[in-house]
Length: 476
Length: 164
Image (cartoon, rainbow over all chains, first blue to last red; front, side, top):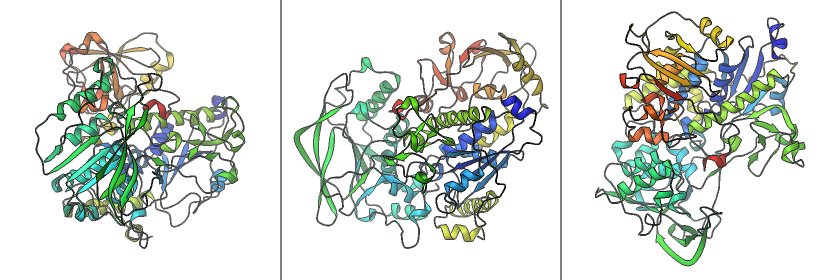
């Protein structure tokens, strides 16, 4: 099929147009695989649509400033954009659902891949006291220290917690985001100096009076959500003391039954649990506690937890039940890090894309049609030509390598469908790109500005956080 | 920084000729001929006669491909130079697990032990085994002559629950 379709007519055939919504890892790994694995005689024209003026998504705004090596993945997008043979455009400052409609995409592209991420909303605790001051979501805190423009917008600016008046912080949840936040709060001035952390965050952290960070999870040690790299990093922070785990937690683990990863996790924790390392600041890892109430007048001053115990049912691994024991611990700041949520794009319903319960419904990356809603999984109806990759595909989980494999998988589905004549037939020849969008050359200008200014300040990069300033710098 | 080097150079470097191709496939061979690019110096060097080391990759399809390589070359570079499906998302800086390989137990102990950084990343690799390593961290030495490594099958239909 593919042979007939392309080889006989490839010379006169129009290029195949692909739109990717979002220019983070989910988007650029998909594009990389598409260009890498597509047949040689098929010319792909790929357009990246990015809401922000800047590319790289979560690599720029999610990955912690002290993890520059993780950001090396950005080379994948840079290579694509700078490969003269590839027909790839970056269209920044262009929000789908606002500046362009989904319908317009459908009228102009043969395949469309939604890779716009899953970090625009949070899971929230709904317990008494949740609306007290100084209870914030980790997502907002992370976006703030990473300089995300939506948190520096005039009139809507995120007000960071008063770290210069706070001693004890409780972080709820123990995934890697929670550990990133803990590292930001515990790390020394020197640790952050020189990174691309936002200047405002750097200045506030210099004045920080935080002395103790408590990382609390509702389940047990074996259900810890962090990865081994991140926990080891926290243990190894200079001048920070780890206060040993509560008695009984390590002792409850039967090491003989663990796999390689879990065994290593326990051995890392054991190694540092009894270390004599001293420090100005301290932290604890706490398990089997769920917050049930935040206490305080205007601002939070303490959190009450119910103590949980493991159910120990081999058929329900990791499950815990509450006991009737409660404890209250003081804290002046609570950071909730219990997961992100995705949001729909304006117009999904109208063009028949099925999104509900925070989920962009798809099967192996192919979007499901609204008509699939009443069908069972075996009789799913696809929304032809539409795909998804990255976190919005399967939820906000997994590390960069997970996203990569997952994106390759979506790209394979796109290619499979192209070969089998399943794509959107496009007749319009009009270029729909808004005039004031940011091009890759615009971004290079901004990139150079950030790098140069960073050099002056002794930072790897000075991030411009205000969108208007970004646009001014590139004369838009 | 070395991150800029790996992929851009790899496209231009000499490809060691495969000396054994079991289950030869026509298109596979054609590809090698098509791709003979101009020689330039990169990570990989042409081994001097008599000093060739051998490495066999077992692909996801079970195909075995053996190459003659130089001492000091790392397995990620070798794989990429030969167009094998191995990514180096972080540019070979031991910050991801995309160059995960499974080493023949017979050779595993001949490789210097992984350090904490490599173990951190291996712990994130899908389908981790007792003899897993990262390709970017394993350099060819005389002790490893003849080593066999498998590329783990890329997982299909990933679900978030698989990573919990």
